[in-house]
Each structure stands twice: as C-alpha cells, then as structure tokens.
Amino acid sequence: MAGEMPWIIPVEAFPYIWKEAFPSNLALGTIYHDLSVIVMTIKSECSRGVLWQNLSFVGKHIDPLIHRLLELRIKKEEIDETNFLNDECCRLGALILLAKIRRRFKDIRPAFEGVVSMPELISILKRHYEDWTTFKSSILWLLIMGAMETENAEEKLWICQQLPRAARMMELKTWDEVYVISSNMLWVGDVLDAEFEQLRPLVLMD
Image 1: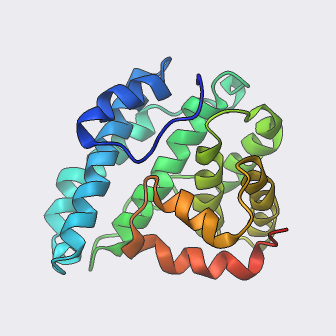
Image 2 (image 1 turned 120 degrees about the vertical axis):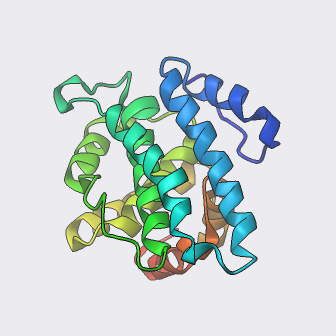
Image 3 (image 1 turned 180 degrees about the horizontal axis):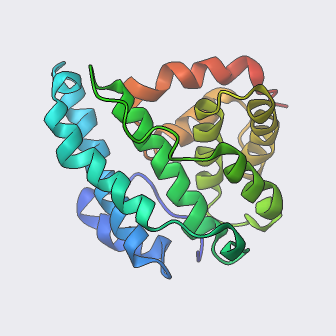
C-alpha cells in the first residue's frame, strides 16, 4: 500500500481509489468499492426510516458481499507482513462491518454469525502490528471494529490498549478526534455510533 488514502471522496472516484489501495488484490478492491456504495446508500435510506424493515436489501446487497469476502480468506499459515494488511485485516474488517449492519435489520434470520474469528484477528495483529506503517486510518478503524465486535473481555481490553497508540500515529489526542477519522471511513452511524461511545471509558487517551 503506497501511502495514506483519502476517505472523503466523490463516489465516481471509488473504483480508482480502491485499485490504488489494494494493488495486489483487485478482487478485494472491487468489494470495497461495492461496500462503499452500499454504505452511502444505507446512510441515505436511514433518513427515511424504513430501511431496517426491508429484508430484501439484505439478500440483494449485504449477503452477496459477505459471500465474496469469505471466498477471499487467506489460510493462517499463508499470512505474512506482505498480505496481512491489504488482504486479511481489511477483509476481516469489512466482514465485521457487514455483520453489524446485517444485525440491524428487523427479524433477519441469524445467518453469517461468527464469520470473523476474533482470536485469529488479534493473533494477526499481534504478529504484524509493527509492520503497519501506512494507511494508518485503516488500523484505527479496524481496531474499533474489533473492539465493538468481540464479547471477550480480555480481547476487548487488548484492543482498547492499542487504540491510543494507533491514534498517536495519526497525531490524534482525543476520543472525539478518533470518531471524526473513523466516521469518515466505512461507517454507518445508525449502526455504530452507540457502540463506539461505549468504548470511550475503556480507551485511555493520553
């Protein structure tokens, strides 16, 4: 990944941005483009107040993306410093986001639960965290996704301990600044804002 990617971009630029973000994984870049469009659609439809009753939206837009992400899984023994970020970590972060969006729909059947192994994600981060030197906004976003997703107290504590370090890499000093960066990425406030605020007392910002 060559450098920092702008997240506040016009929709017509998405295909080019994600090709640059994932130069060695065009399939994941295409998925991120499609996910960006879906996130923008959800944000627009949320204001009308009827989206979360529309189960056909899940079958048409959410579940196919989850299937595509599952097909890109990298075997644990094949993960190294060259693919942990652009491939596996970003793939897992997208799965967490889609799972959270999916749960927000009313009366949706509980499919695709447990598609992200949090112990596996944390294991990858512990092995390769020092290699995360570019695209810093994505590590911040991924850590927040993981902290909100895990139900294991030890895992949540470890992730929350890493968040201030990730924030310092971006020269962020407050939790509100962290929110600004995160919410400018792939973010649906109607789904994520309340959980994000619950993390505030757990993250000790310097």
